[in-house]
Amino acid sequence: MPKSKRSRTFNLTQVNKKTREQKDKLFQNIRDAVPEYQHCFVFSVDNMRNNYLKDVRRELSDSRLFFGKTKLMAKALGQTPEEAVAPGIEAISRLLAGNVGLVFTNRTPESVLGYFENLVLVDFARAGVTATRSFTIPTGVVYATAGEVHPDNDIPLEHTLEPELRRLGVPTRMVKGKVVLGDEDGQGEAYVVCKEGDVLDSRQTRLLKMFDVCLSEFKVKVLAYWSAANGEVTEVDPSAMDQD
Picture 1 (tube, rainbow, N blue to C red):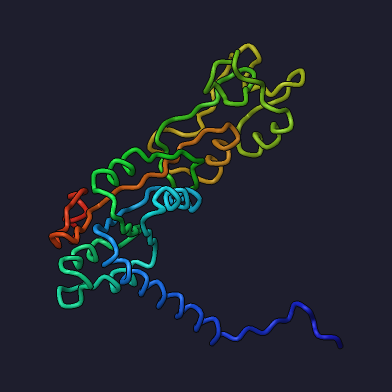
Picture 2 (cartoon, rainbow, N blue to C red):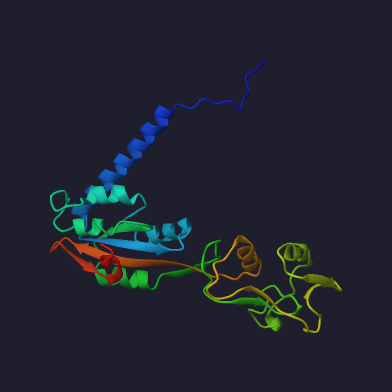
């Protein structure tokens, strides 16, 4: 009987070796970056998106950015004064927990802080995200943005989406080729997709995306930064330092 093409053998020792090499490379890259740059910033990310983080890397192309593997990053910097790769940088290691990363740069702290403070990118919310505002589908003919813009500047929702709306729990129907909620003249009860503060589920996020409603914000919050000139760590978010 011929051997199935789907039957493949993987050498796990090779996979583990590659992973080990990648970790060793990251470890060394972080240690090598310390003497090359004047400042090391530790930052956290709200509503992580890889594509947006790539944009940050491009914007800070003269700097080095590391994200993830917090234990490895902390070990690379040193977790005690004796282990520290540079004086005082061990204080940064204590902040490396959760969704955080490092930026090594020669830019001034003011310019880096200003860049991140103004960096707010919106995206469609994912399940588990807290709604930053309420969203309701008005009664009457359902438009593409469900009332987010004036009807004069909007278009009726594609009729092909009506079955999907009903599947997601919205009691719509077709009237003269248009998707309608309640009565065509606007009588009836509007449909609340979410309220501010709701923890969104997959059904709600699907409805929000159908109407191009973005409730997720990609934000980078600087927790603190270390400066080579004095070996000191300057806190930017006091609550982060209090967690130590």
